[in-house]
Amino acid sequence: MPTTSMNIRTDADVKKKAEILFSELGVNMTTAINMFLRQAIRDQALPLELSLKPSTVGRDDGNFVHKGKRKKDFSDLSGKIKLVEGYDHKALREGKI
Image 1 (cartoon, rainbow, N blue to C red):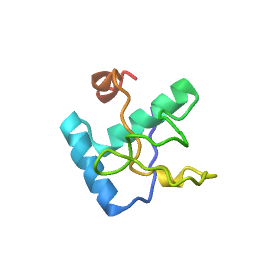
Image 2 (cartoon, rainbow, N blue to C red; image 1 turned 90 degrees about the vertical axis):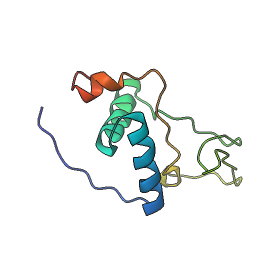
Image 3 (cartoon, one colour; image 1 turned 180 degrees about the vertical axis):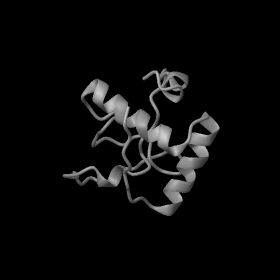
């Protein structure tokens, strides 16, 4: 399968923390982003919960506090994406997904 490159912009601290997390999970940044993209394609939806209610994802301490304003785009979700439990990480790394 031919590949292509993608450039994204994110906060340096978000990138660093994501790399640490992904490393602990046994995947690199490329694999994690590809997992996100494949999950979105498979489900035809963003593989994360979007809500106007307070949540427990997104902030360093695990608590995300909603500021009460609805966003019209998803640019503020940087760093708030979590991996889906039960995803076949090994199959993705081996190119089977």
